[in-house]
Structure formats: structure tokens, C-alpha cells
Length: 83
Image (cartoon, rainbow, N blue to C red; front, side, top):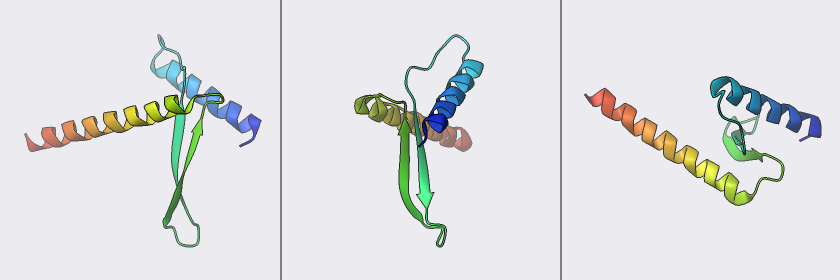
């Protein structure tokens, strides 16, 4: 990734969070993407982009927190649908 693209991504993440949560600021971030081969469309792999200089344990912690939050929200939605 070029420095220009990485800076633009970092700026966009920070601007988005500032707009959503004006009293908070970004300390770390991670972006995950699934990739596929154009000729088949089949899932091929994953890409991970994190803030420059971010420790791997921080990145893994953010991923684990996202997984946990998503799972909790999905479970809550299923419970609401059953009621």
C-alpha cells in the first residue's frame, strides 16, 4: 500500500469516528477484507491492514473484540426475532 493511500485511509477512519463519536478519538484501528479470484469469484484469502506501528497484540485484540461484539449483537437479534 502506498504511503498516500495509507494516510488517506487513516484520515478517513479518524474523520468517520470523529463524526460518529465527537468526544472520542482513534488510538488504533484494523481493516479486514475477504478476497476472491476474479476468474472464479471463489473466496481466496483475507487482507489485513492496521495502523502503522500498531502492535500485533493490539490488532488481534481489536479483531477479537469485533468478533465478540458481532456475535453478541447477532445473538440478541435472534432472541428479539423469537419474541
